[in-house]
Image 1 (tube, rainbow, N blue to C red):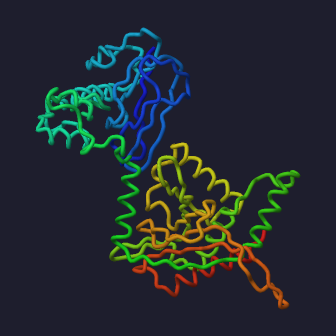
Image 2 (cartoon, rainbow, N blue to C red; image 1 turned 30 degrees about the horizontal axis):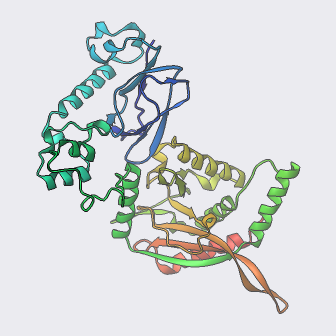
Image 3 (cartoon, rainbow, N blue to C red; image 1 turned 90 degrees about the vertical axis):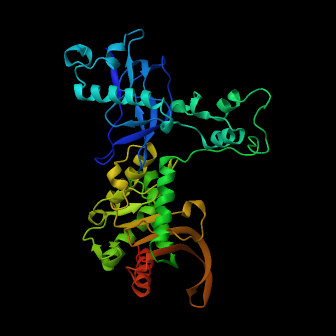
Length: 410
């Protein structure tokens, strides 16, 4: 029995997704849970696993294809199993019994999309060609509309233009397209989204950054005790420095609720709860999932939720609704593990502020009784939207974070 592989719906607003890479090919044998392909929405990237054991009988959409949600992208079944009826029959009475679990509406939608894609290939307005290939074709005065592309989803690539150029004209010259000097890659949807969001943030807000340092001897001591407890069994859960700092940030937000807000041109939305955004570096790009109602959590619960959100982002199965810029009320971005001593984080609009956490540096300090020594300090960089928050309250908020860190106890 052939089992369809459906393009998932990620959020109510997502209508189409783009297949970025197939990890399997038609005819490959797969097991349930094997990675089949990756795809992107305009917000994030995800993976699709095989729903069952079997052989990939058909792949209907290749790399780069934009696919409506809830449409078949492939079929998995027994080797040699016929699949013609599944993709061609539209009559309700003629749907094979083995696929009755899939709605007739979806089958109609799938076939309509496939037919539309086939028709598009014959239309000049729908021609797919890489920018590099297009430049070369225009340089040679070649009409590329009649060329059949060999790239993903029928895209015309440079080798297709080369093959179409007459022998007397020769191949692509290295002066205009030096293939050995550089390569061009199209931006992923996630990268486009990050670029657009960051540009809009800096263009449409009045951002300013304050820097301050906090003595982290108490936090480091708490971390040391936790690590020892994990070894001797007295502690059951690992708590990171970032978890502790996030808890300090939440406590500071409660005293300065004006930073826990969204700014719009004519109003400010103040949140009664802290929905903490945490910047996560993933292979697909930066994601900022929101931990809802973080102010209701103790340190252990907050740690679990932060870890769970980060892992979901890296695996590609985070709820898209949680990575919208409106999902969080305040964001923390920690670059301390990378050794960054100071940086300027960019506000994730419409949020009004973001805290950057830097690395720990030992600095000379007065230890009391005319004794000087080196003390570990962590850098804190608060960027805020000056349209919503003035410098004085922003400084007091940052100082409160510093004090919460310095008096931390576990």
